Image 1 (tube, rainbow, N blue to C red):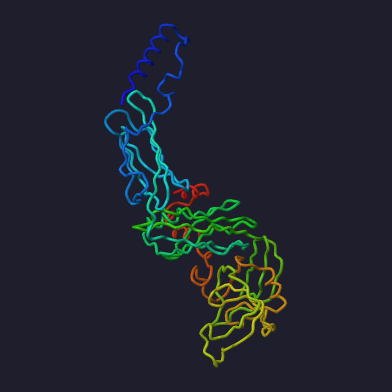
Image 2: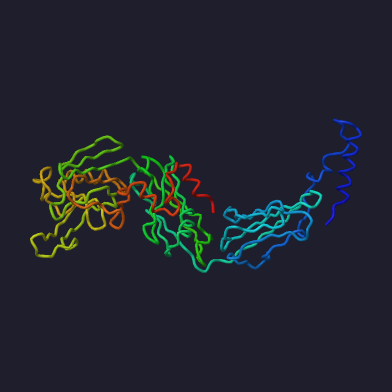
Length: 415
């Protein structure tokens, strides 16, 4: 490819300008190579995968090379239908560009190659191609359902396939984006190979909004495993509500946005059935529950056996711990612990509590002789892990120093 006439024009213009002296102009800038419209670089570059009607294999790296020894490649951009740019590396002499990240599966790409010839004139080659769809998809389902929740509500992500490899977990975690207004510092925690929880460093700010989305669609996670599209989620966070039960004082203190709203006499678990200490998150509310001792391992007919209709029940563990009406123990409420692990109160107080609490609110028990609330597996005990330990459950943050919200955001670029 030759552009000698253009070079001759430039040289002639330069000589003429020199002869006219400083500040004189005799040629228009349109004759300069850099001002020319890009020529078609189709004959200057080659691709290792053919573009056309047939999709290409996303498992193969993409490569653009220069034909011959004249000119060079100056830039390559490859963007998919989701606006994600494919990372790549250009050689120092501009004769080769290759992708450094995996292509996404089942998407269309737009590729633009910028070049210049031996005279510095710009060239361009554009084309588009599709990649073959993935045969095995990794789906992510976010929870809880859209709605309004308390400041303690974790975000959950359930995966359709187990992800064990640390590098693959990092790919997944980077693509699961949680944004809040106002902004907070937070992190995902891998509960197991198929389940992640997200929580902020502190409780969500009262009256904030939280949005969750996935950039995983088409992204290569592992061998022949690619991300699927996911339904985004939006939550509203209500007031900061905390119900703090002091098991030794037999009293529940109800706080809203830091202000004490109510104090309620209660009874908690007696010896052998002591209520768990620690922070629990309200899982839901049930106006009526039939509670049986057999559900917690008490043999039917034993001295501890019971079968009771219970009203205004607020659930805090999957194993059956509630805050509920217990009219049979009113004489003990405020004085001694006589329950089988639940927090009991009068029917009137339980009705008030039921009306003023919602899923995601904090229920904290202190000064009980019971065990500590498990972080996972029996509800949402996430807040019982200190922040430094929580970070160790992240594939991106484990082993790194604590970060600001801006640092955390940089860990979640578009993929």
